[in-house]
Length: 111
Image (cartoon, rainbow, N blue to C red; front, side, top):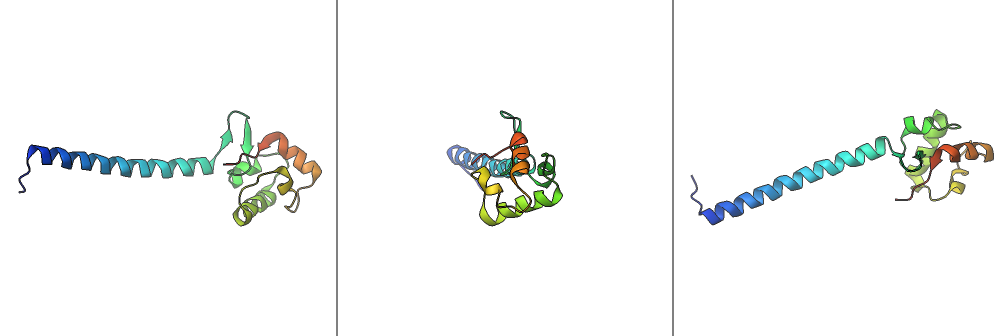
């Protein structure tokens, strides 16, 4: 058995607590990122954020079906988040009428 002075014991305990807190914060931040990505609804606006919504959530937006939702996700993967509504027009299947429907139920939040 290792014999430690009371001061060494306190220092070791402090380091152990810091280590456990660091691990806990890492786990919590990963879980928070997953939850935000899986389902993100901007409560202030009551609209779905196009930049983080998953396939299921995108399909809830009037005017967006499964194929269009998949195209939106692919666009995000290739080019990054949307910064304007005009970028959505670059996606096959989104024309003026569809875009107006989407705008009523979605938002674009830039992180």
